[in-house]
Image (cartoon, rainbow, N blue to C red; front, side):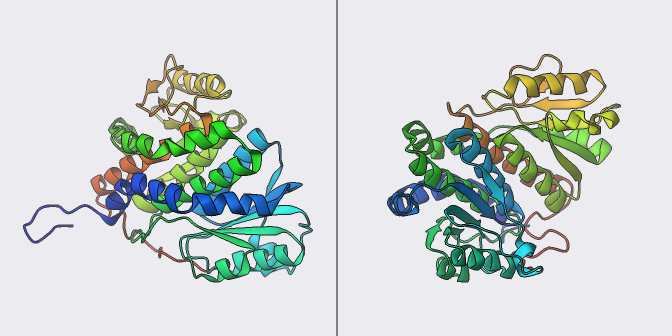
Length: 346
């Protein structure tokens, strides 16, 4: 991609990655008062549920771990096809249902929200399209304030979806520590963009496949990273928890098989580091965002001081890497093969 002078112009994806700090600031400034009000109206839910697909579902997985670890409330992932294809009616009375959809227009997501409202649930839509059908169906709507996203690969919408959900959960839980950490995130996002993960490129090029591992909220980030490898770089990647990878998948890790291990400064960090070192001992090319590893290689990371924001900020460093890696491999990350920006499924 070149401009009129012949210089290489940044991709939409790169521009949108660089917009993440300001998009987060915009959400914190414009949506936070509304989120506080929504949390009050939601009351005290018995449990939480989510409905989403793709990157939005990875955002929901992040919120699941946040809810279960920090709120003590179970959060279920609702299968969209249960309502849209099978006509099932899930009992959701007294639940807080979080629906995440950038466009707010996918029929299967809408069918779940409609059922949730009919069942008496308090349904909150997280969307980047304020006048979408999702906004009209939901009991309350949070505009994630990401602004236009032109690249097919979601970046700032993923980050702001998680941030909006965390702001809501922080209010439901009355968690001042988390709320303060969220206010500081934009500056950490700016620092994270500059972290250089280019050392990953060569081992991945050699094998054409890799594992991305995480634990807790870090597993949600691993899921998102694995998706981006496939959709922007045509590289096969699988995401596993650092515990689950030991139950079979670890058997193929040898002869330089690449591993991206996303360590977070939380209770799971030591175990993830041990898993990373074991795979390095087997002959894997293992790169980890933790200083606890002894034989795996370190990747630079931004330390935010809170486990949840520490996990979220890592996706920003990854996005900067994957956009560069896609171009290095000769792909335009703005227009992945066989994909379009808005996918509507039933």
